[in-house]
Image (cartoon, rainbow, N blue to C red):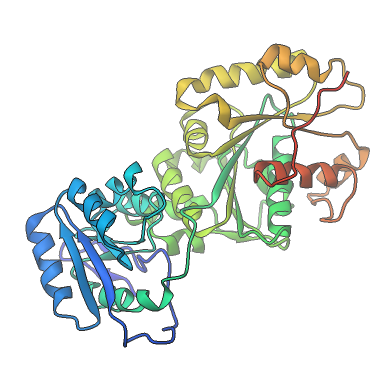
Length: 403
């Protein structure tokens, strides 16, 4: 889908669909797709319904201009697709629907970053601009019947990694967690939110003088951000995961706004199985955005009082905006720890989820800007176990207290 120029001269985001159905399945064109329409603005609603109602491939099973009526229709009907405006799509989170939510397609009169973000958050299959993309909208709806059995997760799991202090091991855990998840066959992206230091670039061995795309490439298009813009800005790592890198020039980090990062992460979560956020060392607006977006927060801490009190301070600073049950503590064990994991529960009020053992070879690998082998033992096993725990896989158990 190519860029289109609007009347005011601004470029509209290209390729606004969040997911694509390419092949028409058996029977497509013979069975009519049952569509329920939920659009709040009456004029917009009538225009969409009139257009789609003339399409012989579609059967309008119901229509509503308020959320209560839309939920009631969905309780009575079994449509193939719900076509909704962004406002009504948000209301489809209604608990009365339970697991009966059908495939959702969003249509909007104006394509904006909040619209795309909402589409990702509610698990929309696609989002279209009206009236520019109405023909493509009708074609997608017509093909939905053939793919009725398909399911798609709402969004990938977002995991944020934060260090209790500088040197705690957060960069090591974040980069290896991304590699481990990718090695398990998950479509994974690593996002470096530490804009000032860009430690991820160094950890991955990316030459600072090499010209690679970073989050800075999204700044010129942040007013019209699309999935294609974000995909084009990613660095492909040989281990099978993608990376949204921080700017190479620290002086340019101020150009990247928290709102841009929020939108980019939301779009990535809609297209990936897992998103790993590498949080900055200091608590700022970017760090808070990462904390609030994450489903799980990995707090990496060594076993010393300085680190543990730093970890407690981090949790306290996050406050009520981040529920306590999202936090999980990962111990980066030194060669000769001065404390035990019992001290973690005493100071932080929680048991560690996992621990990563000390191995001298880790430092040598880090100094070369490399990652451990995906079949590495010792530390590698610890990281693979951590990944399983964060994915809530059956059979995974949190670390036991050790004397």
